[in-house]
Image (cartoon, rainbow, N blue to C red; front, top):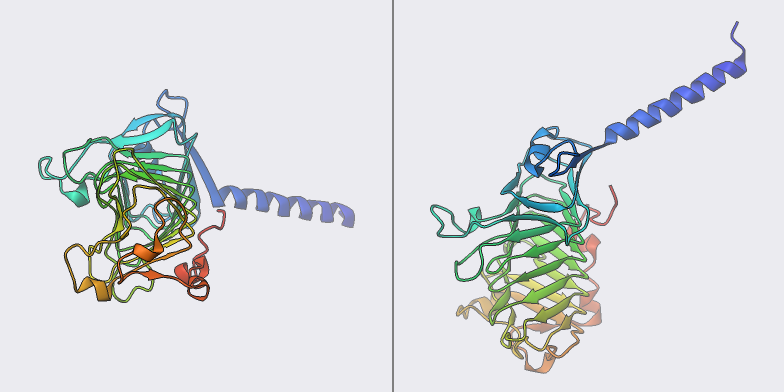
Length: 320
């Protein structure tokens, strides 16, 4: 007969082993390195090898390097994390632009994200097409429940396409730069503590929020800067009639125009769009000179802009 104490020890050991293998199953990890020291040499190869429709987190660790790839995260590649070494030295870059062959705005991306529950950390997404070539998207996100932490998103016109309807996206401590409409689309998006940099006299945002959607673009505690030659930058203009964009406790650089917002020569959009600020600071903050159809939120009104209200049942800041 086996002593009871041995049975208990074996039971505990069995449970510990089950927990160990369960945790391993919940979080898979592979390494991408250009020098061959990882599991893959390209990010696309690692994405392609990931399990389809994964219900558990797949972490793709990307070592330092410049990855010249037009990267696609398909809709069936879910729960993927790209984790770079650091955003200054882990770069994904491509140079497509609208008008290059059959490329248009929506196919000009460097990185396209269609798989839900995508996450990226410490990575630069770059479209290197340069100026004077029209729309050239660095990052195009269509998936739901996507998080970007400590990333750089850099291009010129149309840098970040935050589409489509029903997509929820969260950007934390990210740097985003561009020229015209460089943050655009119809998704529900929160930018927390981000640095937004305008490089041209133009427009930061071009939201196309659907009428039924309560929130569009929400900037919270962000810093807006401009290049020295930029002196006439608008906070936004409505790509579609019901565009919604709000800046909450953001520091606005001197290059922001006193009127703040533009109607895109669509007078009717003045009554259907919703553009607002709350306690803007900095040289570009000028609540008394903003266009009359924009809003300065009250303390009670700004309380609506919590992550819980904006994202509903999705906890965007939960760690995987």
